[in-house]
Image 1 (tube, rainbow, N blue to C red):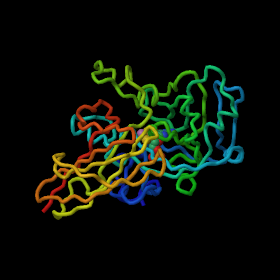
Image 2: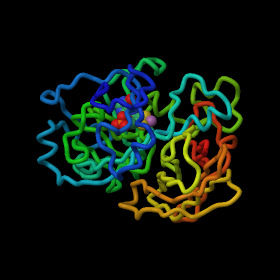
Image 3: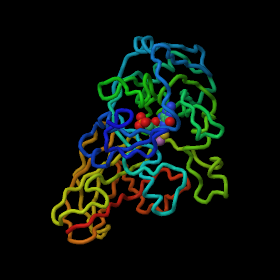
Image 4: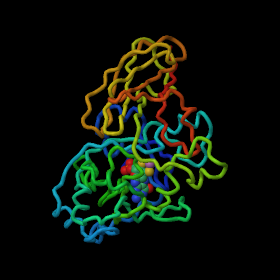
Length: 363
Ligand SMILES: Nc1nc2c(c(=O)[nH]1)N[C@H]1C(S)=C(S)[C@@H](COP(=O)(O)O)O[C@H]1N2
Ligand SMILES: [Mo]
């Protein structure tokens, strides 16, 4: 076992803050990602746990502010369970760094994504009891982990619009995959915002604040914003002019065979995941064994819900020599993935949703 109960073959990008992703093939075996395989994304030290003293405060533009212990919170509202795929905005960043270097950002492969079955309460139920006032438009989440990466250093936070916060899929969760939420994943309580970048699913949640404006936390106001295509020099780092990232778009990755693998030629199983976003499902995945010259349709697993990835499988007859496997997906609204990472390149390396490519050597 690695740090934080992770499997030994995790790629640990950083020990502190702890940032690690599983080997891509480990994500191919099951829809739910086991806790020891689940990616881990942190911006500061994992805060010390003190569940007995922990409380959740609900405040801001509300008529009835709340302060609850974990037991009070669990007793007060009806618990619910939902399968959710969490994906970091930096997932597949290495596909963008191949186009042009992205210094200072974690070089995530296709493993900054995982799926859990989360149990908790609906944020909408909590907000209904707190009674948002007129003018309420955003819901901010605050946590105690202080990030030295922020300017100035500050605790991690973020927000979602009230309209998303009120949707039935947005949870405050204390359990994952039928077990207590692991400490590194936000125990005692984390926000789970399905269909949105992982950054908004704030861990170690201590405060929910109803506001008229988005959170002014660094990770909402500066980081996790998509800079405009041709930003003014120097503005990318300040977040200025950028669009805050929220909803995820259709994405796809190849999990098997491994990138740079040496394999026997001939019929070869090829497997990956696709995630639709926007509450849609994945309608189709095509796979090519000749860099996109010809395509064949993969079998796509049925959607377990609108917020969950779908695995796909096919068998390609690979020729001898260097081979590039490519995949492309469509969602249920007919949206296709952009082909080129060059068109998507941005200085922070977010949201690489271009066609995934895997190079293998067949003998
Ligand atoms: N308190 C806190 N919450 C956080 C973060 C963090 O650093 N601190 N990282 C965010 C980001 S960017 C992602 S992608 C997800 C990752 O969740 P995981 O570590 O449980 O996989 O948590 C989000 N919530
Ligand atoms: Mo993230």
